[in-house]
Amino acid sequence: QQQVKQSPQSLIVQKGGISIINCAYENTAFDYFPWYQQFPGKGPALLIAIRPDVSEKKEGRFTISFNKSAKQFSLHIMDSQPGDSATYFCAAGRTLGRLYFGRGTQLTVWP
Amino acid sequence: GAVVSQHPSRVICKSGTSVKIECRSLDFQATTMFWYRQFPKQSLMLMATSNEGSKATYEQGVEKDKFLINHASLTLSTLTVTSAHPEDSSFYICSARGWDSQETQYFGPGTRLLVL
Image (cartoon, rainbow over all chains, first blue to last red; front, side, top):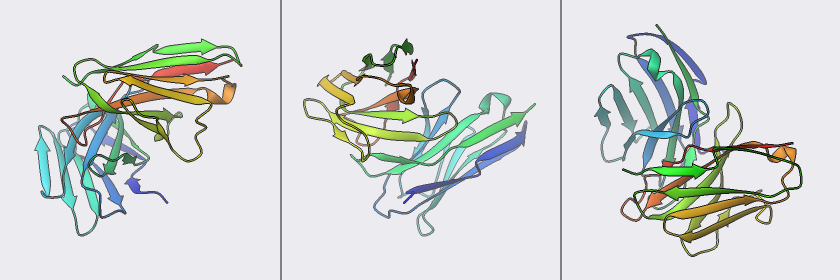
């Protein structure tokens, strides 16, 4: 059973636009929700993370929105830039536990 | 801070040989390290979790005799692929979690393994 479902699989956005990636999780015991950015041939890099006691977290152009009742969370990239073109993974897990990853979203930002 | 390195970055070997991959936390002590495998355009698949000084816990379907994991110190974990075969060719990535962070995993740059 897939613990974390991510959509869309791929996303094309114009420069300056907003990129939105959505994730849904199954286990209500999860209490940590990070997003990772991965460039080809590189390891994932932590972008931003949220805990369920807040509904939104913003760091620069990146915002996580969290809906505990719906068991959903999303990543918003404002003013998307060509340098943001990468694969984005959402994940969910419990404190001191493992992470369950979504299948990834390949984002392409056209100049 | 929170830098994780891997060595080598890429390795090519003949079928039947063993390959060792090192994962180091450079500026923090990693109480837990994780080993992942990633196929092209796919997600990260957790292979095993290791805590310093303890035996690794392998995910279902991962052969522990084939993928030997050692976490001998708080800054070093190794993954040895024994008797490698072409189907073991993949991108192997480690991550580390420090004692002062109960959830954040920092990833290494990955190791590309090609078995001929």
